[in-house]
Amino acid sequence: MYARSKKKDIYKSILRQINVEIVESRNNMVSGSLSAEVNSKLQLKLPLVGGGDIGTKVGTTRKEENGKTFKTVAYDISIAQDMIEILQQSSFSKYILLENFHYLGEETQKELSFDLRTFQDVGVNFIILGIWREKNRLAQYNGDLQDRMIEIPVEPWSEESLSSVIEKGSSLLNIEMKELAKRIVTSSFDSVGVLQELCKEACLAAGTKETMTVKTKISKKELDKAIQKKLEDYSSRHIRSMESLSTASQKTTGEGEVALFIPYYFVKMLLSMNFEDIVSGIKRDKLHKEINKIHHRKEGVRPGDISNFLHRIIHQQISKNVIPPLLDYDRSIRTLKVIDSTFYFFLRHADRGTILKEIDDPVNLFSSAQGKQYQSKTTQTKLPNL
Image (cartoon, rainbow, N blue to C red; front, side, top):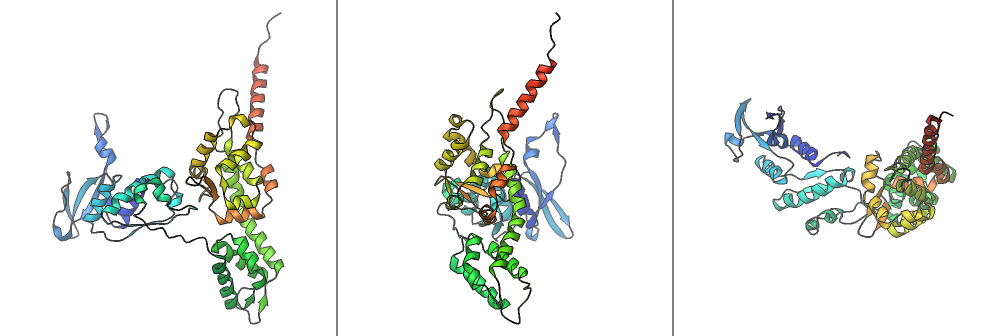
């Protein structure tokens, strides 16, 4: 699924995959404006099993193509009940898989969470894959789902499980990495994907591309090269993400008044903060306190300003094309968390001070722009005739 997909787009995709044809039709004009019914409904072509008719939808037309009988019916697929009727008429009995659910905007996630309750009542079941650092994310959007879903966390991996991946790979390649295993695991931040990448790059640095005839030891120097290689791979995306996020919602609060620029100060705080504090999760109150320490208008940053920023953190990332999102806010425990292990890796190994210096300070830019505007007005002012 894509970040800007809406609920109706997702339902259209489901129908296409179960071979329900969406009939393209022109919009009808009624008294110079679009008909509300035409605007809200889609014409769908449903096959009739055994040629019999099913349902009583108004506007049904029957057609025969290639020896098969179809009916064309208008449905509003943004309504869960209409979707259920279509699925039932299509004899649908499979699970529906929604992958990358966390890419969707928060409003779309909420809408789908409410529809899931309706689908569940009639036995239409969904499997939803998403990345969150909190439990029962969907139940937070719709409390009715609390005891109606099973949550299966696939991360974090335990240290023991990650170590076993290294052991198995080492055995297959006939290499020795035992002395480096703990450092590799620690640098992976519970992600088996990052761990595999570090092992791969360390092996390549040692010239190991296949099972060795003689047992080969991977050295600390080669692991250092692997860490540097992955830092370079991850840096371009994450630096661009920090730059983009820092410019979110940069609007003035009034004529001549500097805006709060909370996204910029948040990025500045994140790049300056103790790494262990980031790993444990940043409490909302602590985040507010740290931003106040460095903000140009300390008295102007209210708790509500911070809460509003955190509640929209996913939306702000998606709007700035930070996809998949790097950060999420758990409202239940009022804690901001990193949800991308490669971002942990980047924050741990990158020169954050240098990166921070390269991000434009919006307060300076605003002051400079105001100065130029004032200078322009002064230059254009005509002197009175003496």
